[in-house]
Figure 1 (cartoon, one colour):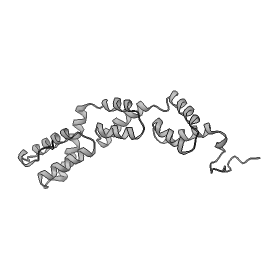
Figure 2 (cartoon, one colour; figure 1 turned 60 degrees about the horizontal axis):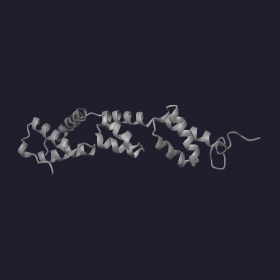
Figure 3 (cartoon, one colour; figure 1 turned 135 degrees about the vertical axis):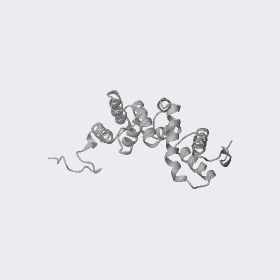
Length: 183
């Protein structure tokens, strides 16, 4: 009689080698229970676990059909969450989504849902939050640091320079003391 808890030759419990589809479902469900994932992330995990491609495709297709995998919903939620929580701009958000295997069209739709007014308001909030820690520093250096912070978060250079220049001017820094944006 076989011991159901005994390890298989590959080190897995329960003998999933005989039921690759069950193994694939378990892997996907375990990953999805921790956090939402894209279809590509799940496919990569199944590939790493040596699940046959045809089995992986069947399981991923079924999970998509029942709504457990939805790259469009994932992308929209990702954009809102990362913009609100980390202040990331469209460019950085698009990069992150593409890195997670989301299709270009889905990425474009998701980042377009973030309007330019909100993006600019977030940039202003980020600068206002960082501005006090740069007081007493040379204006040109402050400008570079603040613009650099926005650039790392994916904000376009023109927007970053304008927002930082306005924030420094409101604080009393003379516009002549600030460097011009690069061409």
